[in-house]
Length: 178
Image (cartoon, rainbow, N blue to C red):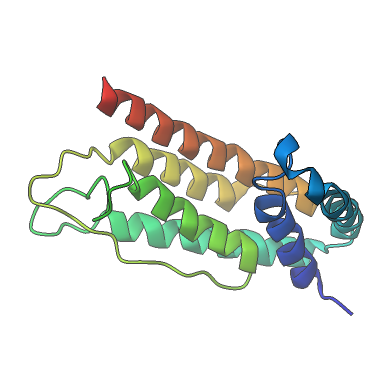
């Protein structure tokens, strides 16, 4: 029998990974039955998520809080006064946002732990990390005081911050191109 944390992992995997890139593409018509099966499984998992206990939600909430605090710690290191690297050593514009989202998603997917990378700083960097630090601080502060009625409410809460981080990433990409 699956534990609540197993159900959460399955739900988040399906939600984040299973439909991409097939859901809205007619050229993947051959995947139609598989997509329908995955959507049905997602509905079943949503029903099971209603059985996640308050204590289990609090475990997930604490894990997200700890991961947020760890990211804040890592991106705030004063590394010889070098700013945080915008691209984190890759060619992906503003990948620092992707690394941050990776840590937070890891915490949401696991509920009982999270992985975190090292963040790179660079001498000639021009990335201003004040906005992302402020948003992460807001997330951390909100996690300290929020009380969630059910897991799906917690998931919506996280998604709202995730969307804001994605919006910051998009804005930085547009600003850099201008």
